[in-house]
Length: 77
Length: 179
Image (cartoon, rainbow over all chains, first blue to last red; front, side, top):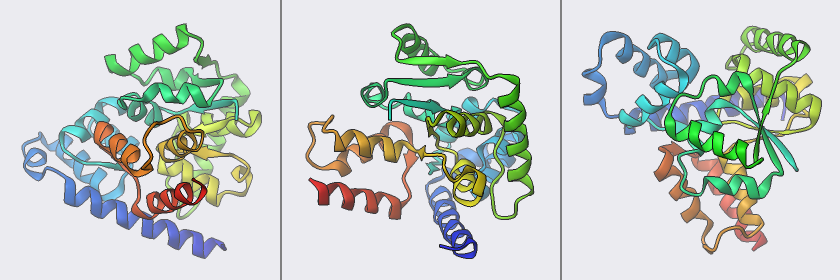
């Protein structure tokens, strides 16, 4: 598999994961959060990047992982 | 396959699985970098880690300056390489140790998976997610269940983790073919 094919494979996996996060998320819970946390959860749904999301939320990575469970947002890896 | 090194994302999900101690039937020792340990805050995870360290199943790995410096270089490289999700220092430390010591890197971080797939200098690093760990445990007949899918579903239920559909289907196919 060349680099272009690998990048395309990852793009498809990222897209599949994003759809799973978006469809399973508890949007009512997300909308009730304070702006910084809501922005972090929405960023996570789009990107799947837990570290940057945790930084946006001003949370430790494990605290943010707990929040993801409360928001019913799956970690797809 | 005696040694592994685990990153934060792997530990915080894996520790929620009701059969989390299966990990210690696969590896002689699982190392946890101090940088990773410092990120663990929940009682569930820290108690599990502390107990496992006391029993000699987990072991702390103190990073040396050369490992940290090499990890910082990897962090920068992932951030300037198009198409790769950047990794942070704790994951990069695991990658460097995995490369230098030939330990299996346990992760649930997609940036780590992409880095190993896309960066030539990391191509020798063996990376396992929970998917591969459970697959190996099933292959070694560490579970009584005949249907491997039920074990993966149980993991998803306990941790609110999801395996990519195509990866899970491939692993189930491989396990059933070898059974």
